[in-house]
Image (cartoon, rainbow, N blue to C red; front, side, top):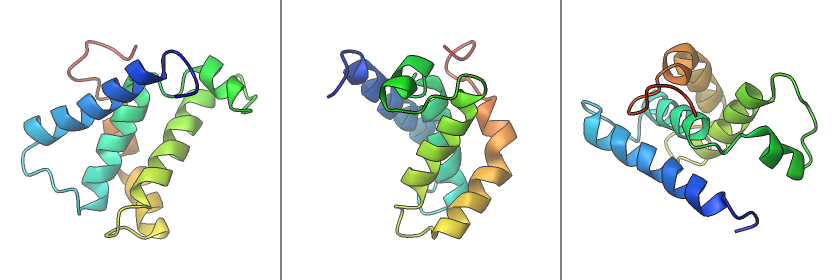
Length: 111
């Protein structure tokens, strides 16, 4: 782990996946849209894309960095799914973006 809060963020990220797997009806990790939605939520809600963390990684954009980071990190994960090509991953992320980015369950709001 490179940063002190990375353990907390990683655990939060994985617990959001666990929540989605338990609560989501018919969650199918071979379905690119299902996987994309969980990745979008996990990256958005875990703090993985906090601006300070992004700055430390060399991403210097101040405005609009968080949604771009969520998309970038989600794409990296979904395209590694053997059932999702890079094109399918991109299409899935775009298709579910608005619903999944704004879904903050089990939190009241995004941290």
